[in-house]
Structures are given as C-alpha cells and as structure tokens.
Amino acid sequence: MAQTLRMRQIGLGLATFIVAITFILWSPRRREYQPYSPSISTPAPASSGPSFGPDYRGQSSPANINQVTNSTLGFSKIFVIGLPERTDKRDAMTLTSSLTGFNLEWVDGVKGEAVPDKAIPFGKNRDNLPNTYLGSWRSHMNAVRRQVLSRRCNRLLTDNVPACGRIVEEDLESALIMEDDMDWDVRLQSQLETVAKGTRALLGSGSTPNSPYGDGWDLLWIGHCGEIFPEQLPENEDEPLYPKFVIKDDKTVPPLDKITGLVDFKSHPEFTRWVHVTGAPICSFAYALTRRGAQKVLFDLSVDRLDANFDNALGTFCRNGGNKKEILRGYTQNA
Ligand SMILES: *[C@@H]1O[C@H](CO)[C@@H](O)[C@H](O)[C@H]1NC(C)=O
Image (cartoon, rainbow, N blue to C red):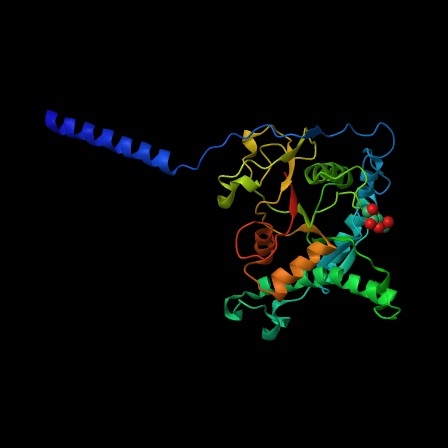
C-alpha cells in the first residue's frame, strides 16, 4: 500500500517535471509589450462646429492632415466593389457614405463562374478553387487594375493620343478600395486623422508629404476583421519589436468586453488603437493602395501567381518571407 503510494508520488512528480520542462521548452517566447512611442491621445471634440459628417473639416496640425476629411478621404478615389445586381447594397452604401461625407465609385464585382480557365493565374488549379474565392479575387483585381490603368492613360494624354475617354482625367496617386458590405463609425474622418498621424510618424514623413497619409507606403489596411502585430509572425521571432504608433483613449474603440480581433486587447489599456507595420490581417474590407502598390499587387497576385485567398495573399505580400520578388509596404490601423 505504502509502496503504491510512493510509486504514485514519484509518478506524479515525474509527470509534473515533464510538463514543466515541456512548457519551458515549447511555450512561445514571452516578450514584454513595451509602451511604444510615439503615442498620442485623441484630441477633444471640436468646441464649435460639427465633429463628424459631411461638414466636418478636421482639427489636426499640420493642417494638411485635414485633407483626410475631404470627399475622397484624402485619397484620389474611393472604389467600392459590388455585384451590379446587388442594388440593395449599392443603395445602402450610397446612403451611408453620403451621410458620412464621402463619394464613391462602383467597380463591378464578378462571379467566379464568369472567370474562364485561361484567366486563372499560374499555380492555381480551378478544381481547388471555390467560385466565391475566384470571384472575390477577380473583383479586387479589377479595382486594382483600374488604378494602374489610369496612369497609362495619362501618359497617352501627354503623348497627344486622344484615348481612354473618361479616365483620361484620372491621375490616381492612391485609391481606397472597399467591399460593398462595409460599415464604419460616423466619426470616420477624425479616426483617419489619427491614422494619418500614425502612418506619417512610422514613415518618418516630413510636414509636407504628397499624401496626407505620408509618403513611401504601398498599402494602408484600414478595414479588416483582425490583425496581429508583426512581431507575432514566426519569421520575426528574433527581431526587435516593431515600433507602433499608439492612439490612447480613443472613444471610437469598442470597450474590452465588446472588441474582437487578434490582439490580446486585455493586456493593453482599454480604448487603445494602434497603427503599425502590417502583420497578417484577415478580410479585405477596406484598404488603400498607391499607384506603385497597385502595380505590385497586379503583378504578384495575378500576372505572376496566386498563392492563397485574396486577403491572405495580400497580407502575405506584406511579409518578408516567402518567394516574393518585392515586398508590399503595408501599414495597418488596428483596434
Ligand atoms: C482629397 O485629398 C487628396 C489628397 O490630398 C487628393 O488627392 C484628392 O484629390 C482630394 N479629393 C478631392 C475630391 O479633391
């Protein structure tokens, strides 16, 4: 009896030891999340005049940040992807965007069934591609292509070639691309002011960049369903922590019991939003591309190959790893 008990004790001790060793050896390395700098608190609402909506003009300095409150939210154009027959979504998006104060243009989405085999990028077998995936990819590529195309038309114009029709006038430095089931906070413009402060800080832009969001970015991932910090990616395990722009006390961030995403929000102060180098976001609700970024996407996600779902492929393209020829310089707002 005593011997059995002794054996049990030894067994239990051994088991505890093994569990402890396993935990030490295999647990993910814990790195302290430092209070990152630079960080800002969101400004108090304007004392006079509207603090959101079509007549809100921003309250940031330098004043050129307030361009993000214009009718294209500081980008050259806003494209929304949607199937032409989904008039319900077009009505809803048109109404909500006009009440918030921005103008959008529609890009017709396509159904996967309409994509012929020959149009499928190298590396993909149609049998493994659900039509929803194929349709989403093609719809996004049509929006991206529209931005790249505008440049060509401009060149033709300077060469005195009267081509291209309406898009001759387009010179799209950047475009925001959205899906047609998007929703947003009515305080979108003031949110974008703080995002622009973040991207400018991370990019080291001076006070007069060409874009109000700063210069040198390819992609801004503004709307997603979850995003991690770049240091959480396996390939960055031994890298120093990435700098983050911390937006504190942001009243537009949901409280801790309501917020969803991929960050461990509970280990940070409530109502924090971050702007940081893109990690691995899920969902492509809303992202902006510069023309250079759009060219890279058109190459990497269509002409050259297609590796994954559109949103995963876009996220992967922002990462250092893989066999990518060039990296997409992406920044995310995260909360
Ligand atoms: C909004 O601001 C951006 C950035 O300055 C600019 O490119 C765009 O043309 C502006 N939109 C309108 C409608 O003026």
